[in-house]
Image (cartoon, rainbow, N blue to C red):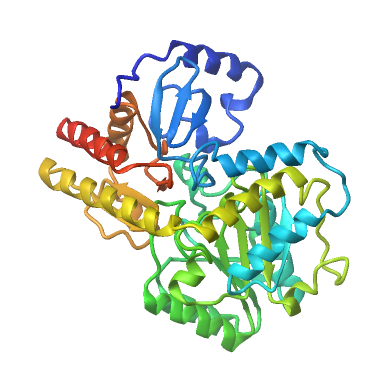
Length: 432
């Protein structure tokens, strides 16, 4: 079922061409193979659970455009909605009913959201949510957690995950010290540190920002004690609790991690799945909090292409398919099958590794586990992961090219493809 995909001369040529005109040959560091070595694969098309590269090789896709393609590539309802929207125009720079329809779907599904503002990316959503938290509370300090990634926002690009972690740059040149002087970085799953921060700044913290299911240091879940402390301490001290659900929103449950865990934050950032593969981000909260946003309030945020009608159509079709079908049950069953198969393969190989999963997000860590924070994640054997990655790639399995990322299962995957992926993993693990 899975073929040898180790020959990729056209990809090599495409990457050489790209490097001449694009920094590093990629438009996002997460796409580079910096953590694993070799040449990024250049893709030509996708269909269902499959990707086809420029050399004609086919791969079973567990990246899914880094999460959005929860239904698989080119889902019929999504493609029909895009085609219909294109008959009217690509953008207007004016309000459209589609913006309201997608907003209604989000408000209906996500417990914390009474009103929502669309943006063009998760980074814009994160930047805007920080500004809103500060504007609504009149405070400056924000808390984030090491290994959590909230986009390349200056104030939050400290001890970040995702590409910043993979590349070994927890912050970035070009970010002035003043931009991060009010950012407090704590360890994930450490309620004691959070309590200490509030004791030190009882009236100074505007918001506490976190990924409620981490995907940017690999899949890490919050403990019940940590979630309780987050909600209780922010409420006690008048700070806003902000869930970055750009990755896990509509991925681990229809209402996101907050619906799955039963903890309602004050602010939520969304992206990826709500755009169905188009560039869409969003941030939302109660109507009271969102009334601080311009033009109603004084917290300014804008975007020429925010609420783009083609992107809105794509998102609407995706969310309706998720709402009206049995997608989450299917995703849970497929991902559990993959988790069990990979765990069995690890045990048979004798390699020190573990699998962590929430819903259709999972990571194979090359460390004993459990992984509960960034320090645990960084115990992983990244050289062994690189060998595993290339072994899987050459066998037709397309995985995230970093130890510190999540795999994504889509509703288009089948039990047969999951089993074939596990079989490939057994082969590769046996060589490590």
